[in-house]
Image (cartoon, rainbow, N blue to C red; front, top):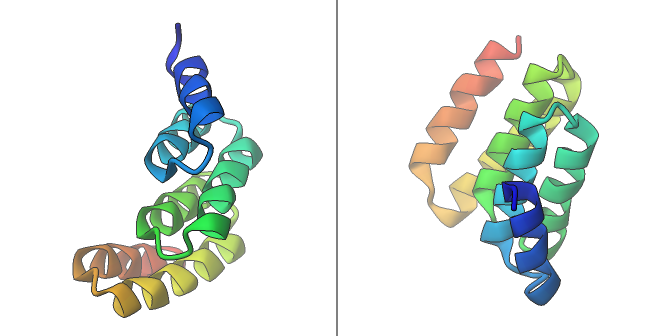
Amino acid sequence: MDRIAMLKEILEGSPDDAFARYGLALEIAKTGDVDGALREFQTILDKKPEYVPAYQMGAQTLIEAGRLDEARAMLETGIAVAVRVGNQHARNEMEGMLVDCG
């Protein structure tokens, strides 16, 4: 069973498992399906808006797709959330990504 199928199976039993959904989003991104990956990141954020890695990797996915305006918006929101939850490491990384977006 491939990773995407395995993660989808996990999510069938636990649809609110943010870690499994995050893994699914990353695996989908690897296939080049940017919109599919972004849907999974957004599903996480709809249910757990303080799940900082979803902002960070969602923005990274957008950057790799050349969708810089969307990436900047996601990074700005992610930075604000990282500040609110006290995740300085993710904040620093996203601030660096934001600079790279231009």
